[in-house]
Amino acid sequence: GENGWRRFWNQIETDFETLDMKPVLEDELGVLERLHEDYFFDAKSPGGESWPALAPSTVAAKGHARILIDTGRLLQSLTQRGPDAVRNVTGGNGSFDLVFGTAVPYSVFHDEATGNRPARQHVGWNDQTLDEVTFHVLDGALETMSNGKRS
Picture 1 (cartoon, rainbow, N blue to C red):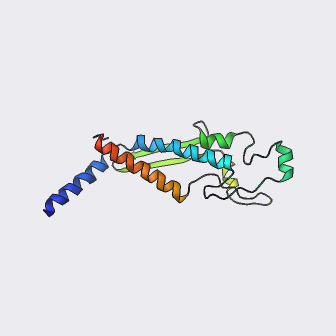
Picture 2: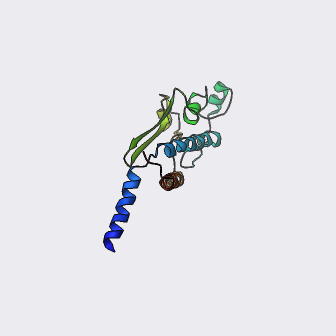
Picture 3: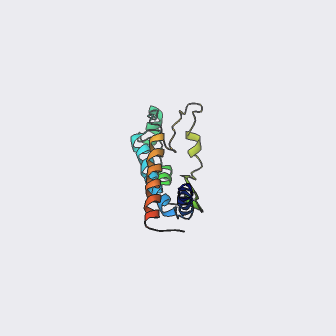
């Protein structure tokens, strides 16, 4: 009856709140790293807009036309683990946080156009990626629950 359904849903809520979702979310950090690598090699923003081409004078000064890549520090901070990579998964009791980004101080200056420099957004994700990550995490939660793994 109705009391049985309430107990059933209460048990699912309790089970979900005791899951250790950190391993599932840590796997998603790798997904985000690969996604950001694609942004750089496709020269596109998270929303799919192409980055404006470099000015001929910039290409001449750099010696190449790879956008947002001089030393590789910014690219590396978003695609690999290292001193400039910001990666963190925290939480428990049904509430977890995933933090992904870069500690490269000049990264933020590329988000908005200033002077002669156009905006080249390079950190983030779009709705499609959010949906994919959501489904990965949901699948991970269901798998974890079915395997009886609790925190």
